[in-house]
Length: 195
Image 1: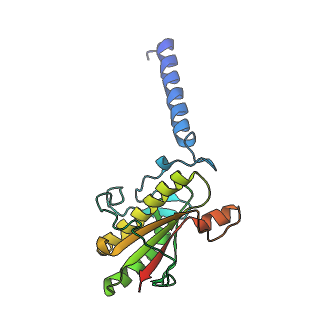
Image 2: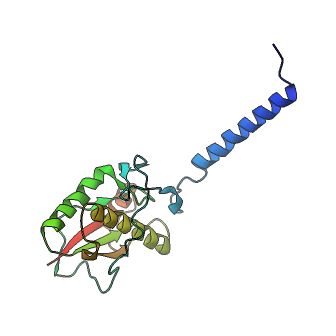
Image 3: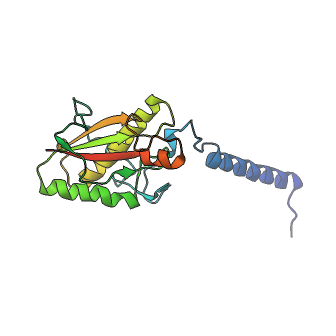
């Protein structure tokens, strides 16, 4: 049996150790930190995890319907006006720094789609965030969340022209206290039906 050259063994071990360090950094170095979230952690692939469990890939390809234009992002839409019914459907909740729809939350979106397929109403998706992060960051994250919900509705057979979105960021918290449970309650998309 031939013995391996010591220098070659050393190089192989050094290379393996480098890979372990790089892989470890990739798994932990980009972890979300309270107060400085990053959008890079949200891949949207089925089977990935969020705070609410496995997530649904509404496009079938890891995306969220980027080719579907958002009709009427604001256009004077007021989710809180008297001609919007807001109590028909429960909110969809998102994990910290996440925009994927967790499989556990997907049934809520499907219920909204079933309603819209049997009614001619128009829908408003009001997106909300917690207070962690900058207003610009939260606006972008809210946009990704509404695109995810909207794309799932389209996948369930809803005409995209019947869906409007509006972003309120952290302005209308469901829970104004400063705790993780309050933040979790504020990371949501709510549904309203035009009367």
